[in-house]
Amino acid sequence: MFENLSERLERSFKILKGEGRISEINVAETLKDVRRALLDADVNYKVAKTFTDTVKQKALGQNVLTSVKPGQLMVKIVHDELATLMGGTATELEFKSRPSVILMAGLNGAGKTTLSGKLAYLLKNKKHRKPLLVACDVYRPAAIEQLRVLAEQIEVPIYMNLTSSDPVAIAREGVLEAKSKGYDTVIVDTAGRLAIDEELMQEIAAIKAAINPDETLFVVDAMTGQDAVNTAKEFNERLDYDGVVLTKLDGDTRGGAALSIRTVVDKPIKFVGTGEKMEALDVFHPERMADRILGMGDIVSLVERAQEQYDEEAAKKLQKKIQKNQFDFNDFLAQIQQIKKMGNLKDLASMIPGVGKQLKDVEIDDNAFKGIEAIILSMTPKERTHPEILNQSRKMRIAKGSGTNLQEVNRLIKQFDQTRKMMKMMTGSKMGKMMGKMPKLPGMKF
Image: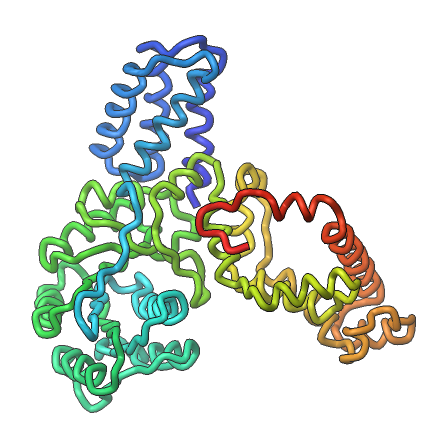
C-alpha cells in the first residue's frame, strides 16, 4: 500500500538534503518531484496541483530553525497537508435513530457484500451494537447465500425473503424485523450496479427513500484509482451519500483514490478494508495514513489492534506463570493466535516506523505460523504443559504427526526455551519496574 508513492516522496525530499535554508528554487525543484509522484500514484491532476501550491506557499512562509533541517520541515508540511487532503480527522458513523439504518451502495465487484459482513462484525465486537444484516441483492446469483454464510460466520442475524424480487420491499421488511426483535442497527446490502445503469440507480434511490437511512455508505475498490473517484462523484450526485469505504487497500493500489476522493466529492472516507478476514476493516484516520505514506509507520493503530486482543485478567495470570517459570506451549499457542487476530502480518510490520520500507520486496506468508501450530497441536496435553519431558522419541512422534521433521521440532523447542528465559529475565529485572513507571500513551490499558 502506497509503497511507490512513499519511495518517490522520500526521493523528492533528498533534493533539500544539505541545503542550509528553504528557498524558492529548491522548494520548486522538490515540489516538482512531489507533483510527479502524486500523479504517478493516480491522484487527480487538479488535486495534485492545488496540494503542491499550498505546500509551496506554507514552506516559503516558514523560518527554518537551526535545530530543524529544511528537508525535515518540508516533510512536516507535506505530512500535515496530506492529512488535510484526506479529511483531517476520522469521521465516525452517526447513529441517530433506533434502529439505526446503514445503506450500502457501490459498483459490481467492489466487495460490497463482504464489506457489509465486515461492518456488522466491527459494530458487534468493537461498538457492542446488535446488528441485523438485510439481503437486498436479488440479481446476482448466490449473493443472498454469500451474505447468509458471512452472517453465520460472524454470528450476526440476517433477514432474507427468498420469495420476493422487490429489493425496496425487502429493505422495508428488514427494518420492521429489526424493530420487532430489538436490533439497534440494520445494514442493508444492495445489488452492485454501474453508474450508467439508470434503472438500478433509480432503484437504489427508491430504497434510500423507503428506509430513510442514518448513513449511506458508498463502497469503492481502491485499486481502480481515478475511475473510483469519477464513479464516486456520479453516485454522490444521485444518492448524496454520507461517506466512502475504500476496499482492497492492502492490494497493489497506488493510493490515488484515497488521496483524491475527499477533495473531489467532499465526502469523508469512513472505513478502509485491509484484507480478506472479517476483522480487516479499520476506521480511516487521515493523520495515521499520512504517517504511513511518509514511511513513519503507525504505532497508534498497532497499539489499538493489540488492545483489542488484550485481556487484562488473562495477562495477569500469564505474568504470574512467567514469574514462576511456568510459561508453557499452551500459552505460546495462545499468544500466536492473538497475533493472528490482529491482521495481515506484513501490514502489522509496516506499522512499525522504518520497517515498512525494509519489507518492500519481502514476502511475509500469513500462514507462517501454521507449521508452529501444527507442531504444538501434535503434542499431548502433558507435553504442552511440561516441555521438559520432550525426549527424542516424543519429538519424532510430534514431527510425524505435524507433517514436519525432527529439525523443525528441535528448532521450535529451542526458540521456546529462549523465549521463556527472556520473559523470566524481563519480569524479574529492573527493566520491568521501570516499564511500570513509564507514562502511558493516551488510551493505553497496559
